[in-house]
Length: 158
Image 1 (tube, rainbow, N blue to C red):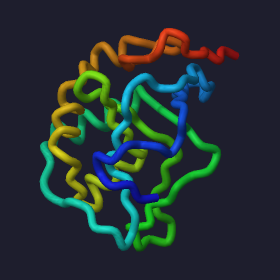
Image 2 (tube, rainbow, N blue to C red):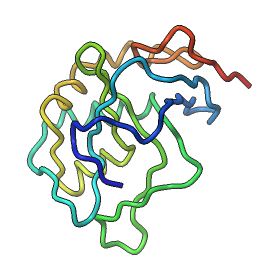
Image 3 (cartoon, rainbow, N blue to C red):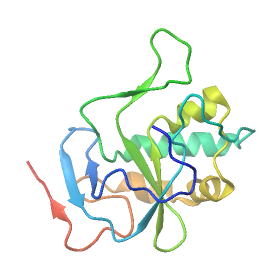
Image 4 (cartoon, rainbow, N blue to C red):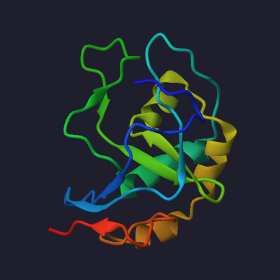
């Protein structure tokens, strides 16, 4: 599924945080912020390439370990890989940007960066590096390590 970097995300009207440990949908809401696409790559479509800081890759992996958004029942395979069994992803990640902006990336973004040489826009790299990982890892479900969650968000506790 291809979306141009920094175009407005419109794949789903609502966002759902899922607890990675239990797999339970913990919070479902209509975002109050604007979501911008990052890293939605597809075979046959051009994408930017280049070096990225090692610290960016490590931080992105760490953020994906504590945040899981819009998990789907099916999985999306990397169609850039010629392998017989390409890697797959079934969720997204949100990274806060400037006030009122969040970057929406597929969970395969780390794979795209490390294996296919994808270089996200600098504003995304800077946003990832700016996240306070200690604050995100200290927050556990049903609290959510993300700003701008509307106060009327529906918590789906099981």
